Structure formats: structure tokens, C-alpha cells
Image (cartoon, rainbow, N blue to C red; front, side, top):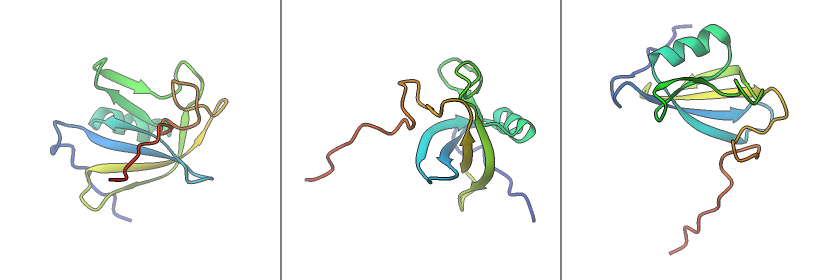
Length: 111
């Protein structure tokens, strides 16, 4: 199988990385990767992001223990976004606010 070349050039060297629970399908979080963090992810098997605010690599769970072990990965049709299906190690609370998913704040989209 040919490995797609991720297009880091479109958005100042970054691509979106969507993290999904491999068993439940629940979307857990969104982060950004540059070429270095993508390489680190493929080398270690754990999702590593580029922190835009701190300007450095950031392996999710490096302090909390809730690491994201990649079991499957894919890119979108334009090769500028990534989807990581993961198994969460630790207590399973991915969000820094202490929840399983970062997506917990409903928005009313009715007109």
C-alpha cells in the first residue's frame, strides 16, 4: 500500500489531527501536527502534536498518563488532515477539563 504524502504546506506547516476512540467511535479531541510531530507519532505509535501556544512538541498524556496509542490512521482526500483511531491509556480522560472527550459544550444551531 502506498503511504500518502501529507500536505503540510497548505496551513503554515500544520495539519489538523482528529482523534477518535477506536472502540466507540467517539471523537475525543482535535490537535495540530507539523512534520516533526507526525514523524514522532509514526515512530512511537502515540499521537504527538505540535503545541501552537508553547511552540513545541506535545505528546498527549505525557504528564497525565492518558496517552493516545494509535491503532489506525488515515488522511482525508486532500492529504491535509489526519484521523487517528486510538486506544486511550490511563484513566481515559482525554480532555484537560477531566472529561473523556473535549467536545462537551453543545451549541444551539437552530435559526
